[in-house]
Image 1 (cartoon, rainbow, N blue to C red):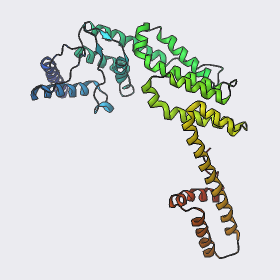
Image 2 (image 1 turned 120 degrees about the vertical axis):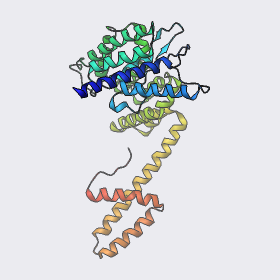
Image 3 (image 1 turned 135 degrees about the horizontal axis):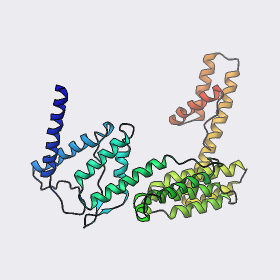
Image 4 (image 1 turned 30 degrees about the horizontal axis):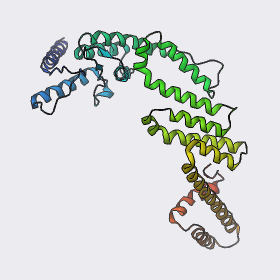
Length: 342
């Protein structure tokens, strides 16, 4: 009983401290509701803001989030009304990701407590209303069934999931809210689904696929292109080249596909790389064949090792190539597949 009273007293003291800190914290009239201390702020003001942030983290973050700042920098207009955008969703997800460490009921309580301390009307009611619907949406999202009768390798499988998700959103949000919360993500999903559909289209040649993939890529925002260029183009090149080789296509077809996808300069570099890879493969195969003959000969083991070392140095002048060769020797001796690039 005595311990119980002590915990109640400590909780009341902590609550009073938080109330005092929030009352002392500077209020900014600017568009962004949560203000950062300016360079001209006094040391006590800076300490107050920092203490406020630390207490908020201790109260509302999960154990695994204690070293992070609460990601809830929501945007308000001049009338202190919520502007629904990606930051709104990031705030919601910051709390939802605590699931597993906290129950949904505790997450809901903590979110409402945090928002009530940091936002005023009319934004407060808007945020809490949207949060309630977002939480319901996330719970309903987990109840969606996977598409039946479709193979997971089929782009239609993922298109079906995407469509079901969009339909579900319309049950909880207005069109403006959907655009604000999910607009950026949806743009990427649309690009990914269209890209998958092009790659799976059996009616298109690889050169035609390359051209369509390039057109899709060029429709992306510039910053997206910079982030995705290496990843997507390398994957598309790998996939389309493998498709051409699998059906016995010609070098001319590979060249045309590359020209359509990455242009003349990159195609020239790729063709140079093809030659280097072919030369490497030829050199390794010749070396391994000669090495096998030495190992099968009747000379002593010491003589075999000396002959192989001389062959290795003669066949590969660069030390880094001889280091790389060791992997091929080991796999060859084990009967494994040699790691030649496709």
